[in-house]
Length: 73
Image (cartoon, rainbow, N blue to C red):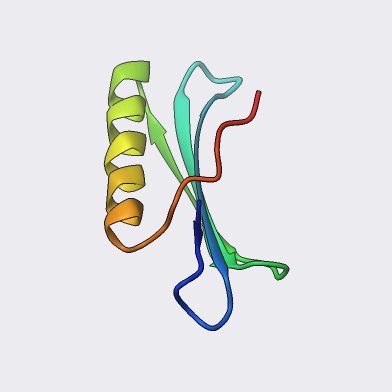
């Protein structure tokens, strides 16, 4: 997702991943485009909770003005 309403375009990314320990992680990254941003990793014991959390963070970002650029495969 990107937010172009500011002088410098920003990005926000939310991703659900499965790790080697049998846990699910939600990775969030944000910052100015073209520069190193910040990231946060949160672990969950099941996929349902991880997806629900990722969806909440995605919705919150969209309320703050970020727009989706599409999906990647």
